[in-house]
Length: 322
Image (cartoon, rainbow, N blue to C red; front, side, top):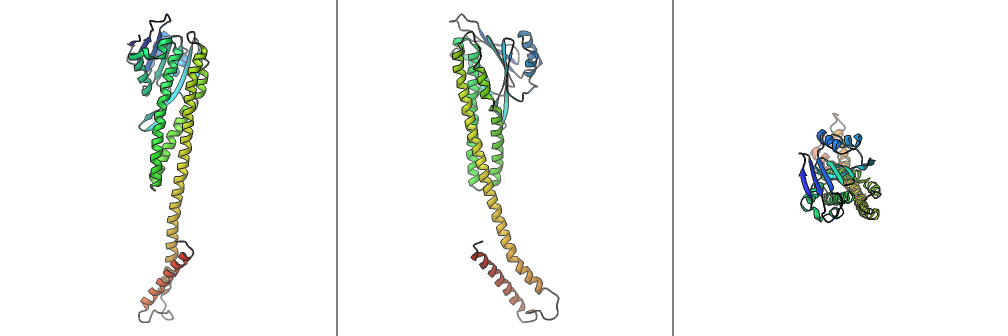
């Protein structure tokens, strides 16, 4: 049965021991917010390389995923998308995998990892790893949970895309523009996080195990590659949708601007002859100005202006510019 022990505030340990087998026990160390004491604990208990221990510090954030072999262990860094105040950011997990042990170091921002660790504590006999007591199988189960959690984030993106689409066709272009930019950033961040997962999983397929046959390990990790491909395809579709929505919104904005400019231009052209007539009849000349010194001269000039305005409107209507 799995045995749980809290070694320190940041270090928890689950020991998976199947009485039905004579194999060695499997230990999972889960370390939250690793600092100097946690790194020192790993240095004393395990013979890990210093560069890998330094990379696992909470203060050190890797810019890209990686997988490297050490002496009798495998060191790996992976990123998974997490929501932080409605923004998608990278949650980093550092792994040490060796015969009989799995060590995870993270900043406690991946809910699916903590949920799976709790399952190991309370219901560990339901795990595939309980039957084989293999760290490679335990790693596979953990990675599968983390990848399945990515689908929920992709679903959130789909919901946000549908909402933004409704805003676009409600002619709320300013609100739609901000939503589209926000979605584009989240989708780009998710693509950046997930882009190298498939290559990492392919390398994990070549892991050697003294407990589980290599073909069986390949079969398990092939499922992770399929998850990675499916996630990437969904991200590609979301990227294409958001780009199409951006183009559509830009078209609506350009049409609206063109319509406003057309209205202003028509207004300017109609007002121009009226302004010209007003300027002409406003000249300070004593003689020769028509209608100025006649009875009802003001109203005659107004009538001329109105006729000119009406003539311009008829001209625009005939040209189908209105």
